[in-house]
Image 1 (cartoon, rainbow, N blue to C red):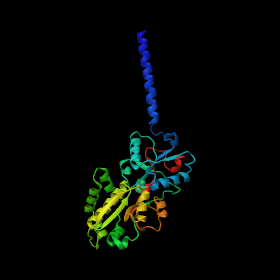
Image 2 (cartoon, rainbow, N blue to C red):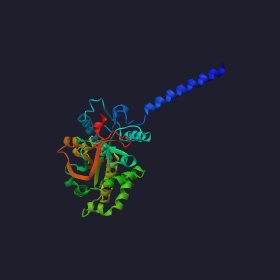
Image 3 (cartoon, rainbow, N blue to C red):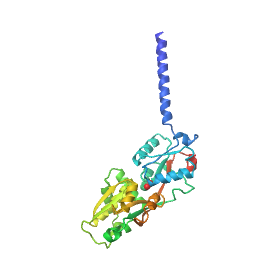
Image 4 (cartoon, rainbow, N blue to C red):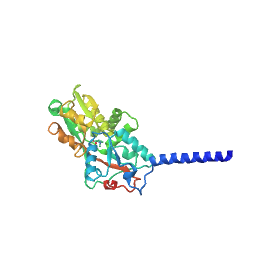
Length: 300
Ligand code: PBE
């Protein structure tokens, strides 16, 4: 009699843990190429900060590809939280769709692919522009000219970002880069007068790419004698800071698509010094193991 009770107990506990385990695994199921991807991820695109240009573009894309009707939603979050979720999903080979961009270490650390965008909502490539406040040319001609000349390549930006991602302070990573690229940096400052402690303020959003570029430019301006402050904020206040002349410049304007709305909103209240980097890219991205998801329409 005792033996059968024991057996029954064991049976019940095994059954119970099987139910528990299957509950867990359905919550963290691996990507299944045979099943609709929407179902697997609860029709959710993992996004970033509400005010980011890419969030607005993604809303547009969801409309253009009819995802808004198929109960898809774009989850507002933060870049840090999105990257943490991405890392976890990749560790367990789970499906995930993110708002991705490059230059960023997410594309070097993980095997990701951009979803094809035949309707060209995100644009083929993006540039990053330098935007300054009106009157800067007259008030701080040396800084204006340096900012006007500043330009670098996506790989160069990535190399600074990677160092920061590996724990180097942004200021030191930028300084090391300056030392290693003397002739390029010299070409930005050549012939410009040294100033003596004039103040200048740069604003940016604390995305890794902008942390890299802003610290770089700040250090170059310091080498010219400026007293530089850099201030991180959200994207809308960043554009407003230039338009209201609360700040002097930003090197963080992703255009023409990503921050095109802000460009339009503030038009006439800033000076666009053109691109400082060519060949950035923005779009929906998934891990490469999601074999059957290759274009945005595959999400439907
Ligand atoms: N980003 C990274 C920004 C610009 C840099 C793509 C998240 C955006 O405005 O969406």
